[in-house]
Length: 622
Image 1: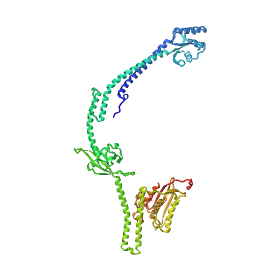
Image 2: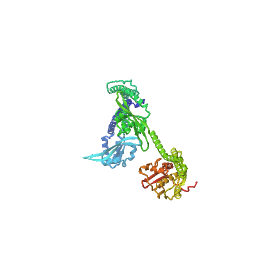
Image 3: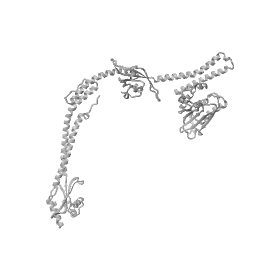
Image 4: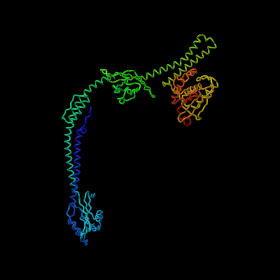
């Protein structure tokens, strides 16, 4: 709905305002010029009126030339008293020495005979030139015209300066007259502007009325009402524009009916599609993309408009537009990156007219990411678990069959067969327990029992157990029976490091790494264990001199069920879950675990834990 315009916002008012402003500006320019010219002429006339007659000047010159000062001053006073001009407020006569010889102001008679202090009079006496100015007196708030005229005595061919006449006249009459004229002119300007504004409104109305009718008609067209017609007032430009609006109304109505039919057709297609939908024209350029497709492809629908579908789906080079038009095959789009995984199935269908003409293409995108991920993880898990369980079960089955066939009667064979069966059973139980531990960690049900421990002492305690195993040649709950010689080298910081950890889980991590280091180290090898402190972390490392890890396998060493040497690992009782559990435990502590390895030279596992230095006595409860 169109917002209603106020009168002052309409073009009707704006046209009238322009005319009024033109009138006003014109009058102001003419008025300013007229007043200035009138002021100039009035001042000229005023100056002529207040000038002293030549008779007065000659009389003053004669008296200033006399040697009898007293008599001359008396005559000058009489001359000044005879001056009859209401505008002249003061006339003062000064001789060449700057002495005041006469003054028309009765209040200034005391100054007669004294030196003048007026700098303008002194300057006229000095250079002999007439000086005049307009001045303003703040004492009586009036403006005055001041004229200082030098007086010359003629003797022969020479003129001798004998004094000067100072004249001051009031200009109030002149400015009062100018003010009256200005008020009259301003009033006439306002009246003329008002009349001009009224006429301008009448004229602008004749112009804007057809425009207003056309605006209303276009508003009806916008609302879908094409029944109205604009009245054509004449054959001028506005009349031709009105006729064009009427023609436009007919054309828009026809186009709207066609567009509405096409829209219903498109809505019918989209209403049955719950997945992402992309529609193109016959050249393969995108014309419609729904919100689901926009989110799946991570592109704004406005940005995709007009682009080729081959570029939008990033399949240019593998397919051409003709391939999509002719084959209509399903295409798998793998949009996965380092941050997230996304797989889409793209199905294509043609948009054809009844004549068979292909007017475009429709692509339906179905997200199968989660389905693919679940299928892959399920297959991988089933494959790994079945593979890990198959070996001990096969071994157990062989020994149990042998015992069932009568080997249990042989006292030399039966105990060994039962021992192997028990070992394989323990191996499967360990693997099931590891899987349950990982499952609890994945679900978040596994909690840490944190306590503040001296990491130096705990690390030493764990390594002492491995030294003891070497001396006793026995196995513990966490280690296999030692069958090789090795040396544990310690390189610890002397500073005590107190860290909050879950002692049992941390010991399990170190046991896993130490067991691997001993398993894969050669007989007589050295396992180097280090402990150091950085700014806000403690770093543990365990280095062996074993076979090392191939470069291609380093990034997978912490994956579940992953083994570098599968045959050897399985033969030594490994489940392939120890390092995966270790990684989960360390990350639960807010730390990191990683490995550096050179194939043929050995591996070094690093554990980084957050560390905050404790000040003062750790056991001080205050």
